[in-house]
Image (cartoon, rainbow, N blue to C red; front, side, top):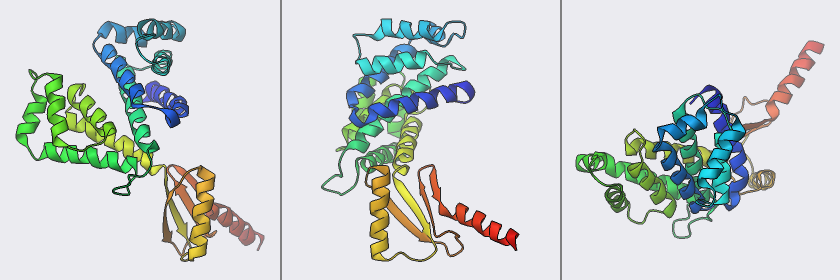
Length: 275
Protein backbone atom coordinates (compact mmCIF):
# COMPACT_ATOMS: atom_id res chain seq x y z
CA UNK A 1 0.00 0.00 0.00
CA UNK A 2 1.46 3.34 -1.02
CA UNK A 3 0.59 6.94 -1.83
CA UNK A 4 -2.84 8.18 -0.90
CA UNK A 5 -3.88 4.78 0.53
CA UNK A 6 -0.89 4.73 2.86
CA UNK A 7 -1.75 8.22 4.10
CA UNK A 8 -5.36 7.20 4.73
CA UNK A 9 -4.26 4.12 6.68
CA UNK A 10 -1.79 6.16 8.75
CA UNK A 11 -4.55 8.63 9.65
CA UNK A 12 -6.93 5.80 10.54
CA UNK A 13 -4.36 4.17 12.81
CA UNK A 14 -3.75 7.48 14.58
CA UNK A 15 -7.48 7.89 15.20
CA UNK A 16 -7.79 4.28 16.34
CA UNK A 17 -5.11 4.79 18.99
CA UNK A 18 -7.53 6.63 21.27
CA UNK A 19 -9.84 3.61 21.38
CA UNK A 20 -7.15 1.00 22.05
CA UNK A 21 -6.72 1.35 25.85
CA UNK A 22 -10.29 0.05 26.35
CA UNK A 23 -10.57 -2.05 23.18
CA UNK A 24 -12.03 -5.55 23.24
CA UNK A 25 -11.79 -8.58 20.99
CA UNK A 26 -15.41 -7.98 20.02
CA UNK A 27 -14.39 -4.76 18.28
CA UNK A 28 -11.82 -6.71 16.27
CA UNK A 29 -14.40 -9.38 15.42
CA UNK A 30 -16.81 -6.68 14.23
CA UNK A 31 -14.12 -5.14 12.01
CA UNK A 32 -13.20 -8.55 10.58
CA UNK A 33 -16.91 -9.10 9.93
CA UNK A 34 -17.16 -5.82 8.04
CA UNK A 35 -14.08 -6.86 6.08
CA UNK A 36 -15.81 -10.09 5.09
CA UNK A 37 -18.79 -8.15 3.77
CA UNK A 38 -16.58 -5.75 1.82
CA UNK A 39 -14.51 -8.59 0.36
CA UNK A 40 -17.62 -10.47 -0.72
CA UNK A 41 -18.93 -7.62 -2.89
CA UNK A 42 -16.92 -6.08 -5.72
CA UNK A 43 -19.70 -3.55 -6.19
CA UNK A 44 -19.45 -2.41 -2.58
CA UNK A 45 -15.67 -2.07 -2.82
CA UNK A 46 -16.01 0.07 -5.93
CA UNK A 47 -18.68 2.21 -4.27
CA UNK A 48 -16.49 2.78 -1.21
CA UNK A 49 -13.42 3.74 -3.24
CA UNK A 50 -15.09 5.65 -6.10
CA UNK A 51 -13.25 9.00 -6.31
CA UNK A 52 -16.26 10.64 -7.93
CA UNK A 53 -18.35 10.14 -4.78
CA UNK A 54 -17.91 12.39 -1.76
CA UNK A 55 -16.41 11.09 1.43
CA UNK A 56 -19.59 11.86 3.35
CA UNK A 57 -21.67 9.92 0.83
CA UNK A 58 -19.43 6.86 1.20
CA UNK A 59 -19.38 7.15 4.99
CA UNK A 60 -23.18 7.33 5.02
CA UNK A 61 -23.35 4.15 2.95
CA UNK A 62 -21.29 2.28 5.54
CA UNK A 63 -23.39 3.60 8.41
CA UNK A 64 -26.52 2.51 6.58
CA UNK A 65 -25.13 -0.98 6.00
CA UNK A 66 -23.67 -1.69 9.41
CA UNK A 67 -25.34 0.49 12.05
CA UNK A 68 -27.08 -1.77 14.55
CA UNK A 69 -25.28 -4.85 13.21
CA UNK A 70 -21.88 -4.10 14.74
CA UNK A 71 -20.70 -1.97 17.67
CA UNK A 72 -20.87 1.80 17.38
CA UNK A 73 -17.06 1.96 17.47
CA UNK A 74 -16.72 -0.53 14.61
CA UNK A 75 -19.26 1.35 12.49
CA UNK A 76 -17.46 4.62 13.22
CA UNK A 77 -14.07 3.20 12.26
CA UNK A 78 -15.41 1.68 9.04
CA UNK A 79 -17.29 4.83 8.03
CA UNK A 80 -14.10 6.83 8.64
CA UNK A 81 -12.22 4.55 6.28
CA UNK A 82 -14.93 4.86 3.67
CA UNK A 83 -14.70 8.64 3.87
CA UNK A 84 -10.97 8.54 3.12
CA UNK A 85 -9.26 8.26 -0.25
CA UNK A 86 -7.96 4.95 -1.62
CA UNK A 87 -5.83 4.21 -4.64
CA UNK A 88 -7.45 0.83 -5.34
CA UNK A 89 -10.57 -1.10 -4.36
CA UNK A 90 -8.51 -3.69 -2.44
CA UNK A 91 -6.74 -1.12 -0.29
CA UNK A 92 -9.74 -0.36 1.91
CA UNK A 93 -10.01 -4.08 2.74
CA UNK A 94 -6.30 -4.25 3.54
CA UNK A 95 -6.78 -1.25 5.85
CA UNK A 96 -9.72 -2.88 7.63
CA UNK A 97 -7.63 -6.01 8.14
CA UNK A 98 -4.74 -3.97 9.58
CA UNK A 99 -7.01 -2.04 11.94
CA UNK A 100 -8.75 -5.20 13.16
CA UNK A 101 -5.41 -6.92 13.77
CA UNK A 102 -4.13 -3.83 15.57
CA UNK A 103 -7.10 -3.98 17.93
CA UNK A 104 -6.33 -7.64 18.72
CA UNK A 105 -2.68 -6.79 19.33
CA UNK A 106 -3.65 -3.89 21.61
CA UNK A 107 -5.90 -6.18 23.66
CA UNK A 108 -2.88 -8.46 24.18
CA UNK A 109 -0.74 -5.43 25.00
CA UNK A 110 -3.19 -4.26 27.65
CA UNK A 111 -2.99 -7.54 29.55
CA UNK A 112 -0.80 -7.62 32.64
CA UNK A 113 2.29 -9.82 32.69
CA UNK A 114 1.46 -13.50 32.49
CA UNK A 115 2.02 -14.72 36.03
CA UNK A 116 3.10 -18.27 35.19
CA UNK A 117 5.77 -17.34 32.67
CA UNK A 118 6.45 -13.70 33.46
CA UNK A 119 6.05 -12.61 29.83
CA UNK A 120 3.82 -9.83 28.57
CA UNK A 121 0.63 -10.33 26.61
CA UNK A 122 2.36 -9.10 23.47
CA UNK A 123 5.21 -11.56 23.90
CA UNK A 124 2.71 -14.36 24.48
CA UNK A 125 0.86 -13.40 21.30
CA UNK A 126 4.06 -13.34 19.24
CA UNK A 127 5.12 -16.71 20.64
CA UNK A 128 1.75 -18.27 19.78
CA UNK A 129 1.79 -16.93 16.22
CA UNK A 130 5.34 -18.18 15.76
CA UNK A 131 4.41 -21.61 17.15
CA UNK A 132 1.53 -21.87 14.67
CA UNK A 133 3.72 -21.07 11.70
CA UNK A 134 6.36 -23.52 12.92
CA UNK A 135 3.72 -26.25 13.12
CA UNK A 136 2.48 -25.46 9.61
CA UNK A 137 5.99 -25.35 8.16
CA UNK A 138 6.80 -28.78 9.62
CA UNK A 139 3.88 -30.60 7.97
CA UNK A 140 3.07 -30.75 4.25
CA UNK A 141 -0.19 -32.48 5.18
CA UNK A 142 -1.27 -29.49 7.28
CA UNK A 143 -0.27 -27.11 4.50
CA UNK A 144 -2.42 -29.02 2.01
CA UNK A 145 -5.35 -29.12 4.43
CA UNK A 146 -5.25 -25.38 5.06
CA UNK A 147 -5.03 -24.70 1.34
CA UNK A 148 -7.84 -27.09 0.38
CA UNK A 149 -10.47 -25.03 -1.41
CA UNK A 150 -13.24 -27.55 -0.72
CA UNK A 151 -12.70 -27.59 3.04
CA UNK A 152 -14.97 -25.40 5.14
CA UNK A 153 -13.66 -22.41 7.06
CA UNK A 154 -14.82 -24.03 10.29
CA UNK A 155 -12.80 -27.18 9.56
CA UNK A 156 -9.69 -25.11 8.86
CA UNK A 157 -10.11 -23.11 12.06
CA UNK A 158 -10.59 -26.31 14.05
CA UNK A 159 -7.38 -27.76 12.59
CA UNK A 160 -5.47 -24.55 13.25
CA UNK A 161 -6.55 -24.42 16.88
CA UNK A 162 -5.35 -27.99 17.42
CA UNK A 163 -1.89 -26.94 16.24
CA UNK A 164 -1.50 -24.44 19.09
CA UNK A 165 -3.12 -25.88 22.21
CA UNK A 166 -3.19 -23.35 25.01
CA UNK A 167 -2.80 -20.37 22.71
CA UNK A 168 -4.20 -17.05 23.91
CA UNK A 169 -7.64 -15.86 22.74
CA UNK A 170 -5.91 -13.06 20.84
CA UNK A 171 -3.69 -15.49 18.94
CA UNK A 172 -6.59 -17.82 18.17
CA UNK A 173 -8.61 -14.94 16.72
CA UNK A 174 -5.79 -13.86 14.40
CA UNK A 175 -4.94 -17.44 13.41
CA UNK A 176 -8.60 -18.21 12.80
CA UNK A 177 -8.94 -15.15 10.59
CA UNK A 178 -5.82 -16.11 8.64
CA UNK A 179 -6.94 -19.66 7.87
CA UNK A 180 -10.59 -18.85 7.18
CA UNK A 181 -10.11 -15.59 5.25
CA UNK A 182 -6.53 -15.49 3.92
CA UNK A 183 -7.56 -13.02 1.20
CA UNK A 184 -5.47 -14.50 -1.58
CA UNK A 185 -2.26 -15.32 0.28
CA UNK A 186 -1.10 -18.32 2.30
CA UNK A 187 -2.49 -18.39 5.84
CA UNK A 188 1.02 -18.69 7.27
CA UNK A 189 2.05 -15.55 5.39
CA UNK A 190 -0.89 -13.64 6.83
CA UNK A 191 -0.03 -14.90 10.32
CA UNK A 192 3.52 -13.70 9.70
CA UNK A 193 2.15 -10.27 8.76
CA UNK A 194 0.13 -10.19 11.99
CA UNK A 195 3.26 -11.16 13.95
CA UNK A 196 5.17 -8.28 12.35
CA UNK A 197 2.45 -5.86 13.45
CA UNK A 198 2.72 -7.22 17.00
CA UNK A 199 6.51 -6.96 16.98
CA UNK A 200 6.32 -3.39 15.71
CA UNK A 201 3.92 -2.44 18.49
CA UNK A 202 6.02 -4.16 21.14
CA UNK A 203 9.09 -2.30 19.90
CA UNK A 204 7.37 0.96 20.84
CA UNK A 205 7.94 0.08 24.49
CA UNK A 206 11.58 -0.96 24.30
CA UNK A 207 13.98 1.85 25.18
CA UNK A 208 17.41 1.44 23.62
CA UNK A 209 19.78 3.65 25.61
CA UNK A 210 23.33 4.47 24.51
CA UNK A 211 25.65 6.01 27.11
CA UNK A 212 29.34 6.89 27.15
CA UNK A 213 30.11 4.80 30.25
CA UNK A 214 28.36 2.02 32.18
CA UNK A 215 25.52 3.21 34.38
CA UNK A 216 25.65 2.70 38.11
CA UNK A 217 22.74 0.90 39.71
CA UNK A 218 21.39 4.20 41.02
CA UNK A 219 21.69 5.86 37.59
CA UNK A 220 19.98 2.93 35.89
CA UNK A 221 17.15 3.10 38.43
CA UNK A 222 16.68 6.85 37.93
CA UNK A 223 16.75 6.42 34.14
CA UNK A 224 14.13 3.65 34.31
CA UNK A 225 11.88 5.75 36.54
CA UNK A 226 12.28 8.83 34.34
CA UNK A 227 11.47 7.00 31.12
CA UNK A 228 8.51 5.23 32.70
CA UNK A 229 7.14 8.59 33.83
CA UNK A 230 7.76 10.17 30.43
CA UNK A 231 5.93 7.43 28.50
CA UNK A 232 3.34 6.60 31.13
CA UNK A 233 4.12 2.88 31.31
CA UNK A 234 6.79 0.36 32.23
CA UNK A 235 9.48 0.24 29.54
CA UNK A 236 12.06 -2.42 28.90
CA UNK A 237 15.41 -0.59 28.97
CA UNK A 238 18.36 -2.00 27.03
CA UNK A 239 21.53 -0.01 27.79
CA UNK A 240 24.68 -0.12 25.66
CA UNK A 241 28.00 1.68 26.05
CA UNK A 242 29.25 3.84 23.19
CA UNK A 243 32.44 5.75 24.17
CA UNK A 244 32.27 7.82 20.95
CA UNK A 245 28.88 9.28 21.86
CA UNK A 246 28.95 13.03 22.42
CA UNK A 247 26.45 14.46 24.81
CA UNK A 248 26.27 11.61 27.27
CA UNK A 249 23.09 9.76 26.30
CA UNK A 250 20.91 8.74 23.37
CA UNK A 251 17.50 7.14 23.90
CA UNK A 252 15.34 5.51 21.22
CA UNK A 253 11.82 4.30 21.97
CA UNK A 254 10.19 2.90 18.87
CA UNK A 255 10.67 5.50 16.15
CA UNK A 256 11.26 8.35 18.58
CA UNK A 257 14.83 9.42 19.34
CA UNK A 258 15.83 11.57 22.30
CA UNK A 259 19.38 12.48 21.34
CA UNK A 260 21.35 14.74 23.64
CA UNK A 261 24.40 14.12 21.47
CA UNK A 262 22.97 16.26 18.67
CA UNK A 263 22.86 19.31 20.93
CA UNK A 264 26.35 18.51 22.18
CA UNK A 265 27.74 18.22 18.65
CA UNK A 266 26.28 21.59 17.69
CA UNK A 267 27.82 23.17 20.80
CA UNK A 268 31.17 21.59 20.02
CA UNK A 269 30.99 22.83 16.44
CA UNK A 270 30.26 26.37 17.65
CA UNK A 271 33.25 26.21 19.97
CA UNK A 272 35.49 25.05 17.12
CA UNK A 273 34.23 27.77 14.80
CA UNK A 274 34.79 30.35 17.49
CA UNK A 275 38.43 29.29 17.53
